[in-house]
Amino acid sequence: MGTREQKELEDLFDELDQLLKNGDVVADLNARGINASLAIVAAEGLRAYLRGEKDRAAEDFSTVGEEIAHRARVSKAQQPS
Image (cartoon, rainbow, N blue to C red):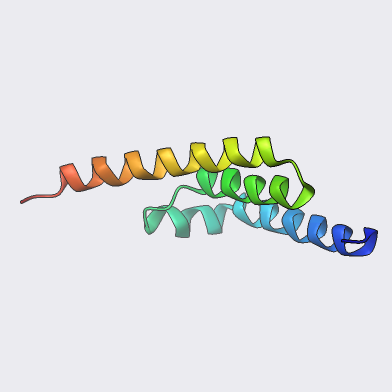
């Protein structure tokens, strides 16, 4: 991937980061049970992977996967039978 393409990807991730920190977007995500902070970590994991930072990407994806799975289990346990 050339310099121009990498810059375009970086710009896209910068925009996504700003969007995921926007109060209206956060409120919409929260209303749907989606944690914006976890989405940011997931996006950072993908950004790291596309940069070739595989160890960091693996750590971020692992964190996100574990947290989403945990939240899904808690949510399921809280639902009436």
